[in-house]
Image 1 (cartoon, rainbow, N blue to C red):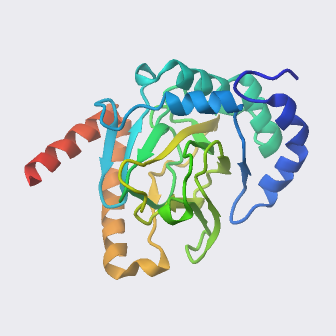
Image 2 (cartoon, rainbow, N blue to C red):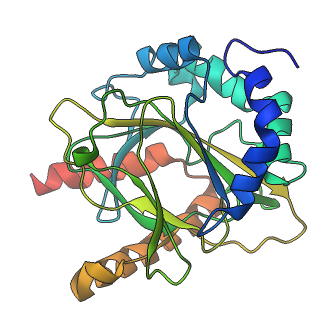
Length: 280
């Protein structure tokens, strides 16, 4: 198999038996971590292409369970970002994912619903959760895999932001992945695949946790629809746990409206910005 300029198939495909073994054996649920994931020039260009956080095209998510910015509209991506996403959604790369995960007939999401570029600044976080199970605009698409590519040079351990993978009982964090430059993680998105980085980032001002997230689906006859399922950790306490639960119920209501009326995340950003101005 010939390399692309973005992903080295000649390097990774021969390692697919080991990657598959690692993926299937991983706890608390199937996942695998790649270092030096993209061809280095492609990773460098992807980082150089990353939009400034002050630009208007970012969707703002600033609630109790989430504090982050995201862009999933390809019209706002640069050439390098479009090229990387194109490769990672290509038939060749999806076949590679099939080989290492054993999941057949994976479907990429060209609309990047919930995915795309993410940036989280000092104080930002993402509480532990399991992802929504069905694509909001494709009722028969069940979510199966997440792919996250990190773009953080010189990221220090004390900054936080490690991706935590929790057991289904929400008793123990079983794995932690530091968001280092050109590191990627692929993990299975079952209904109890709890993950996140819930502690506020302690990175210096002007530094943010940058990533590219892509999701993959399979067509199913009648997949069970469930919204993003946020969970409290044992150490979070009763008050925080109650807040996480209440906000989760509000998210479910929004998710139902989104599926029924076709809202996009820009709509949420407008509401949150309006509420923020009123508070001021």
